Image (cartoon, rainbow, N blue to C red; front, side, top):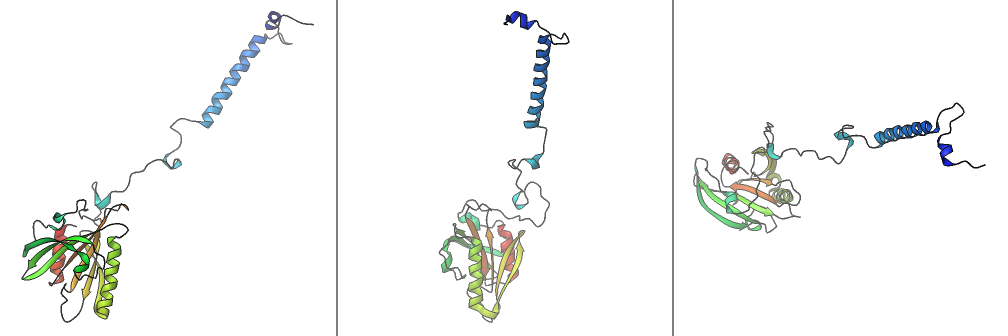
Length: 230
């Protein structure tokens, strides 16, 4: 037997409950269930923390004690960005020093134990009648200043044997290597060579080799090294 649609829409269940009301309740229940599932899957931005999201950028620690760092162990040296003769200028000069000349030089001609032809600038000064040199050489990747320092240490040990001394000192808040030649006759480059790396920390940047040496006492070498602010 077939009934018209108008008759079905007004029919009731066995308890006399209208079918339209049953449909309405079913739709409401479906809507509540959908909202609940959406909350579990998506959620608002208030749920979770930074540690839950590995993509969140976190600030890098400042280099060289910037942004008000009070860490006295942080380097206070100026990072070299423009490589020209001004990198070896010292202003003001410490008492007792006189500037003589600033020239471009090649590292492997300076008797420092450097085999590579690094281009650099050398500031020649005089202290109490003796020459003192502040030099900066550019190291282009894959050559690094730290690598050149290791070569200098090896060359120094080979040249002076048991009379070679190598130690680490602090200059302007960063580590530097001190090469000492404990021999009777002073070598042409001097008994003391103070050397360190000036580098931004970016693996794609050049690094710079800073060298202070001369036929003077270590205290004079150190004074010039600190005044360079490198």
